[in-house]
Image (cartoon, rainbow, N blue to C red; front, side, top):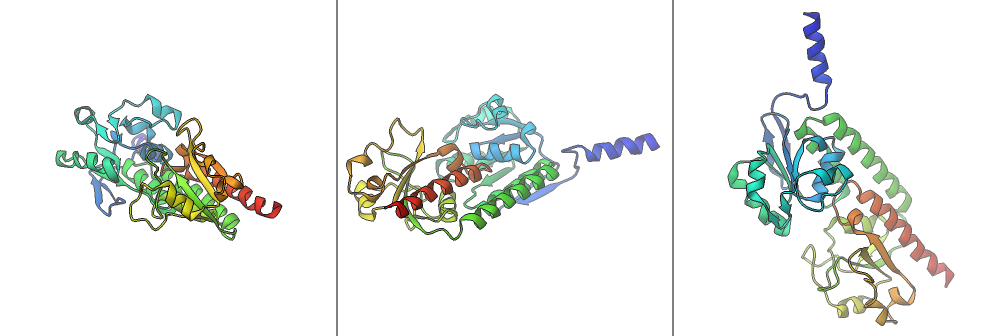
Length: 293
């Protein structure tokens, strides 16, 4: 009997050994309930893959969409297509007991195709830092890795608070945040990137537009005359070349053309804090130029 009790105690201590039904509410305010912690998870967004790994559930991911490349182990996960073109047959073959997907735009349309199949779906759509921390806890709950999720969420919140304490009183800087050149696209104030900008003292010149990722014109940017233009590195060889033609634009005149790692800033995962820290430092450099003039 003592040996049996010891074995049972060990089983309960192992990650993912939680038994019984688990339930959370996802970012679409839907209850997601599983009869037992998930052991076969399909991730349909790179940020979801990153969060699952951070929540201690990486070992249970059996399929992921392309560009799920972080952490490095994620590159070995079998592909189930892209966020806008899923391989539904492949997903069904993997027999997932949980699908985690991005609930936005074309990705949401693809996600809807899975709903009639009866597979439990967690819809992920973090628009702020608090939701990312909460997501780490909720996903770990669904995977039975609660302890790992709590540690990750606590560390995230502590680092977020430290950034707030450091930068919340900085002088504001008007910013144009470019996510694509042709067509010229940006992000509105509801996007997670705008939360990062606000934390660093940046003011998104297109924050009030209704679309999450609106198309804008060069003329609109020139009229707003932002103090800084920020673009994701890797979008093209010289993403700022078209802007350098406008020598009267404040961002150009003052040399405030800022490159940022899109994998860190544009993905709604835990590494957003890495991108935000870099962004805050670069906006501080913009402020320093004011005192040099």
